[in-house]
Length: 169
Image 1 (cartoon, rainbow, N blue to C red):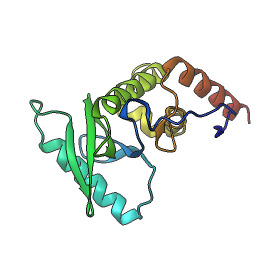
Image 2: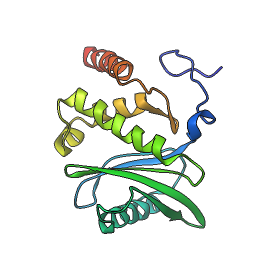
Image 3: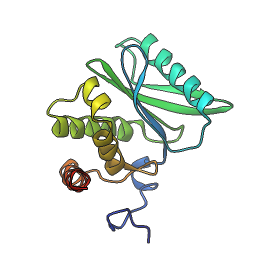
Image 4: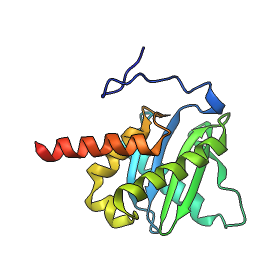
């Protein structure tokens, strides 16, 4: 059995509701600067910058009357980009073509709720000045490219424990 850092058993979520591995998550501001990014598959730094720019261009040019899912090419491979806009921030997940978009669309909503609960209303400055806390929440919610903790309350409890332990050291 596979366990996370706190010793909890991880369940394989690949078969559940069409949820497979997330390739990366990006949170970008209106100018396209990444304020939070996590890459679960290896890319070199130049490729990451190109992908971030392409994600920004893809999201910005789509109007609100389109769906929040779009095919997205990385090299010769086709993936899906699932995104949501909240205020001035765009949250985007890159998933495989066969994955369930609605599961990941809901995952973005849950992650935003997790950030809102933790920061009492998240904004770009929270991600900039409290990036360690934001990454702790992200790592609690998505582990190794899989949604590890669908319960916002449990993810918040573990994140609070981690924050307390980091503050004590």
